Image (cartoon, rainbow, N blue to C red):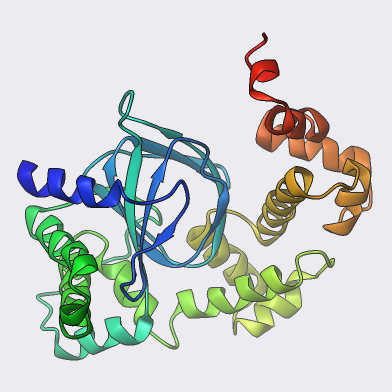
Length: 294
């Protein structure tokens, strides 16, 4: 397995310092040395080198090499990336989850018994069979003539291996068109599209075909946060991006992402990112020599 991991790492070292397209459907790779603040789409995520911590709601989760995890719905998360050492950046792979592909596997599956849903975002050690399937998938980057035929087959194998593991129950739930994850997914998509607007939970619960109490419970179990916390995290992630790339002042940006109070925005921003918005943005805008204190 060490040889397979070394080959996988060498392939993923081609990635940029962001999620990089591989030319293979739904497969992306990353080589990173900085923070991991983003909205994660439903995906299977495999860590190859280095480690990552993600803050999702009130949870702080750690992912080490040779572990994988599932993101069941769109989730705004903040985090840190830790390279293994000098010249050894964080390396990871992702497979965007297609419920239709998973459903075709379930149609042929013979289950030995019901599996309960694992805790969302749990880290699981990747077995050798899963690593081998990923390696064969990534080799197809250099074999485009073979990829059209073989990549869909290997994607099914990767998903099959996950179905057989501790996160199989969650993967099955993702494929159910009438399951609770699909119901919550509708709500998260609505919040993402209307994140600057105030909302009431009752219409979202009705949209999800749940009582308000059940909606709260399932939303937090699935996304790691309440609907209001989810909206706030979306606003703050968007605000941070705007602070780095938009010339407007912090108060204007606060109002543009839905805040009615600039002081409340500053407090919540500092609570999430560790310092007020203006100071945080200045760290990234300052010349390298100034950041180093020279």
